[in-house]
Image (cartoon, rainbow, N blue to C red; front, top):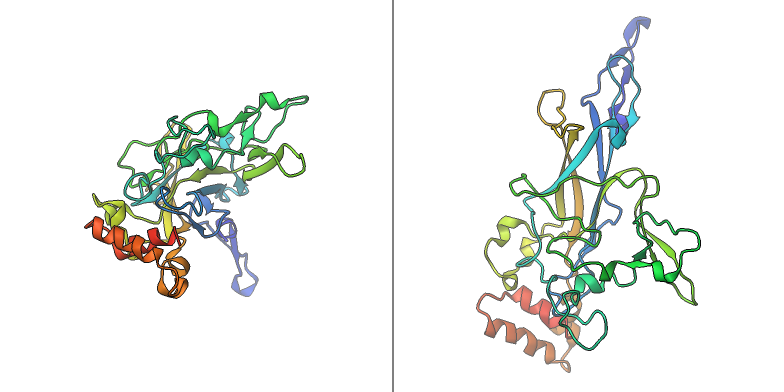
Length: 322
């Protein structure tokens, strides 16, 4: 729809006169989307791991038709533009939004959980590997010994996704790298091994020829709702499942691209993320009946032990053992 709106429109004129050419509202049309639809994520990986946090932002930029008749064009970095991104009032995830980084898990299966890599963000990328680049290219005659596994390349950093990109908030108060990488002619692709001895199966994480932040660890919590509260204080009413991402454009010199009214050109996209609501089926009397009582003890433990634990948090933790 944005692409259609971005080109010149011809309006019919009365009496056989020449049609009126309508100037596009904006010099650029910015298309923002995510390929996942609604993604859900767990919040406390000490207890349950339904799905890891993983949301992507994908952007295309179209230069609309010029006043001189220059045709509309789908842009690339060669055209001197660089999209920047930031989530409105959502600048971080680690801590009181998400217990994920630093949680101990025996990733390398050596019976210990002491290595820096022994944590859930590493476990979730264990199957994935490259041959040196993330574009899914396997050099001729490459061997298994040349594989580069994501899980043992580096310890994960707070608020970073599996390809190294970090959550950034909006307005841009904190210093962050907000530039969206361009995916190039092949997109972002990793390899996995399959069943029956099959190897080097490509997994596409982002399509080619657009700008994309892949696998951002986004949550539905806004910064102001969390403040300095603990993870245990979380309530379902805080979830904002349709997170707003703001996209701006920089030119080749790193300066903001202006809209027709001389203000910085901005676009709004929506990235969907929510909680799995495990307690609906696992943390209630209706789900467990009269025979299963352990979940009740678990919920009571959190409520009695921690004064800041909410009913919602206690039910979610209880669901993890139900």
